[in-house]
Image 1 (cartoon, rainbow, N blue to C red):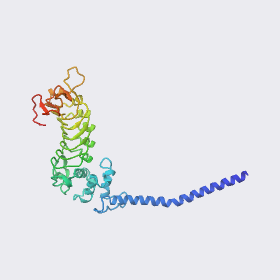
Image 2: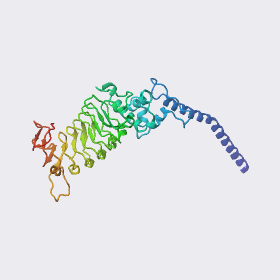
Image 3: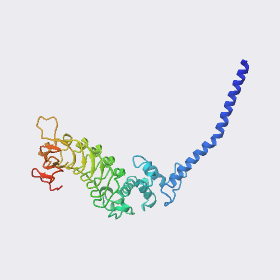
Length: 366
């Protein structure tokens, strides 16, 4: 009996092994074919990524000899630039800018052009993201064969065109719509002025704005921006003017704005901001000249401090450079903000809304 059991066990083990061999042998071609189909599908996606209106990309002969088109794809697909999701979405501005720079741009820049290539791609993305083809009033030069420094609203520094870098974008009153794309951050080494005010731009303030380390002027007022002021806005250490009034921004003023030690104008008038005025944090902004906090839903106290006070206040800056401080501190019958040193007292339920508390050197009107 024992011998019969051992014989049966041996027979079963043999059958299991033989069956497994047949199974692996039968599915191996399918695995191979599946991998081949997947590879072909990927090549087809890459080749036709810009759609049938553009010629198909020529597949590389080998992984070490990828042509211009594939080098561009390899660069832009990096998440620090645009990423695969944005590039793969045919309706995205990133996709439109990518296909333009691959197929249509007369300059035919290569990724070897490095900084210049990314500068041109960044501006093309801004153009498509703000509906340039359909909306802009003036778009002379944009997406032409000219150097981007000759495009309307773009200013540059440098001598020869090959070494010119974008330092300013001024497209105010130009019927821009859409959103501000994250690719604006690709100009982080050179951009000093971004003026897109008095347009119809919506969406949020992209956190990538904080990477524009040389930015001195940011004017985005009179648009339709929503969401919060990004907390990392405090990284813009060189910023002199932050003008965001006349939008739909909500949430709190981040305390990190206190890191904007070179800021001279802080204007968030006429938004939907809430929370307490970060007076102590803003007291660190010793170069402030004008602050507009009015026509929001802010609360709190902006009070004078004494020599023994442990915390500072915006009022401490009144003896320095701060000449204009506007807040909703007008009693009618109650004030949202208590302020001991405001020069303009406002109340959005009053008529008139604001009154001048003391003489001011500012000529700005609200």
